[in-house]
Length: 439
Image 1 (cartoon, rainbow, N blue to C red):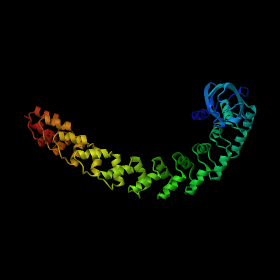
Image 2: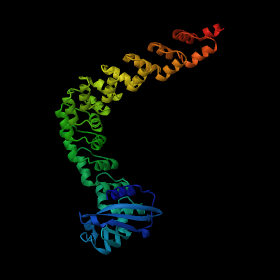
Image 3: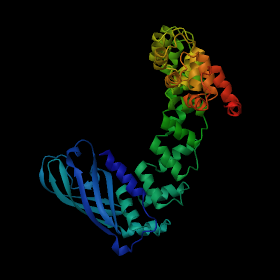
């Protein structure tokens, strides 16, 4: 049933301001339905209404206080038969007729707008209420007394749409007065609604002030509530040494999941004096107490915050370290491991090189081979044109200077055969040399 409330909110807010109708046409007919099984749980009743208003098909999901629906018996949910009840409010009256069969009820409704309400709204400056706004004001119980009370607090020029939003989200004169006493005067209609939507209350503001956060902007308060920055969170972080944090710091901490528990666990893992910014970076990149413990077990204790972040950023995982160890590289520095991941040195790459006859290569040589594209395929292609067992460093130089199997074949076509690897490189560097000397 929550979806009904959300649908009502959307339907009531998307109201063209230009819709108008003569007083004698202030009547709307439509259909309604409800799930009667929920009627006896609380004193509130949710009803879905559908109607065509000036060519538009509109759906409203609205919640009413049961006592306002004259003739509705909430305790006869197992009955079957006709039902009739009415909603009478200052803005108009809705008469519901229909059927109830066990848990479901449905039927037709007729709304009749109040001409007296229209006259009262005209006196308050709303002489142009559209039919849809008028109907919505009935459903949301917008009264002239409510409008007058809001005007007395400075809200003389808010739109009919804003008045409806005020009622939907619970913005009233009492709330405005409370906010003013808390130091938030002259809030816009939008700010008032956002405060209510996100739960910015006087109590919340006072509790934040007790933690040292006074005179926060309206945007700060809303964003605090959105991201779960509570007085309790601030107090717990303060107990761990994270005091005098800026509003932005607090929000970032909550956005990225830096909780007091996480801070304590990282402290126990050896990071008891890191900044909040470091904790945020840890969470962003997945540096956890478990990851730190795993690294220590693999022979990497006491890694710095920067090393841990780099490891996670570049994918130096527990499984990668173990696989490289099994491939014969079990005493690499963290920097070597990071460089391996950056340049794509994998256990599979090492195994393929071993199959090609290249064992016991240094970590630096492996990196350079990947950087310059010395692949097992390149090694095979060079072997096929007669260049087998070439030293790794020579292979690297070949790739740097674009010496490949096609180049060897081109030389052979010009009767330059049986050249050494070094001669091939020289020929590529000085390409005009062999063209001038060809027989």
